[in-house]
Length: 449
Image 1 (cartoon, rainbow, N blue to C red):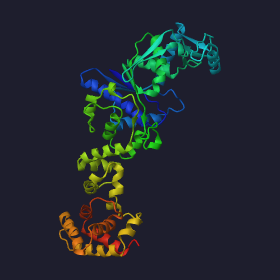
Image 2 (spheres, helix red, strand yellow):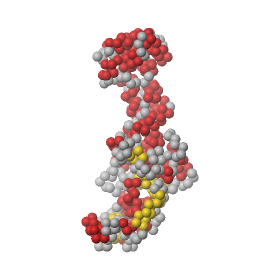
Image 3 (spheres, rainbow, N blue to C red):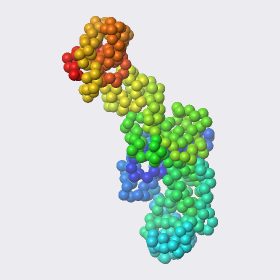
Image 4 (cartoon, one colour):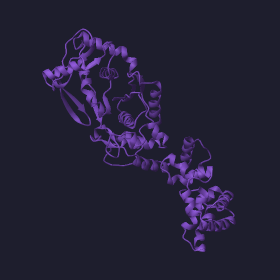
């Protein structure tokens, strides 16, 4: 098996493209696990000279590397094969399988007006102009691993343009020739390419080559059922990375978007995905990318990491060090790396100052009286251990004849500046006695109302 991922470097690698890359990668690596020769080829389709930039190529490579999708050959620039493409065009002209014509879009419309709207345009060699491929009589069959066989009647197809007047090749000629030369056996890409496939089959036929098997993946939709776009949240791999997702969670989630085996498991390792993946089991219907579900899955991955591993990754993500204690008591409450600092940043930056509602609600006169009592009780603790802090604060509501939250929330707001934080006992123990008392004193002295 030889598969290829062939993105156009006209921007960042979008989520749909990442899923296509993943499915190709899983197909190749799965074949290798079964002992079959297989390769994953990376080709950069950079024929759009204006939009294809080195920076965009680097974005694509960066995204694939972050996802852990390595390749066996490439990255291969399609532009570098232009001499080969031109050679094929000349061969087709020489053998009378292609011709030059100056026919314009208006000429094509006039032809259809005369011969019928369902009849494909047929031209004659004018010795100059763009180069079109003759469409033979008969039909074309696309053998699709997902959709089954689709038959196209040649009579309805226009003679496709395969090269410009200067001989420079167009996409459908270039991609077919590149796939032939690379001996690609399976083409797994989005269904937006389906309209191009018959034109590529014409090139295969003209060159006397057997086409690969195709798998046209249904496009991704957002939770609202509409085509996935930036309005649904993160649209590119880099945006997912910057939002604090783990690559292994992203891979797991993308793999299951439109595909899943009978076991219907949620957490699957890369090895399990490679062993189980079957492109023939991909659904024909659009899959829905839901970032809420991805967050949930990512949270499961985060909580499965050791504290040391999560600490290391968070320190790389935030650029901060010394996070282990805060990570340990926050791990159960975060779903992405981005969740960590809003939850636990007060350990390092001091209590938040932008939650006036919390201060107004819990640091009023009654709240300050409760804080004073908590300060007296905590101030005599020695050692200031988690167990001692918890026992002391849990006993205080009964002593003060108030509900537990009337003790815990004022203390939480004093320490964190907000009502959302890791466990209050763990937070106080991590801050230590001196800092805990200092923050309580500051809250008493500067009430919210």
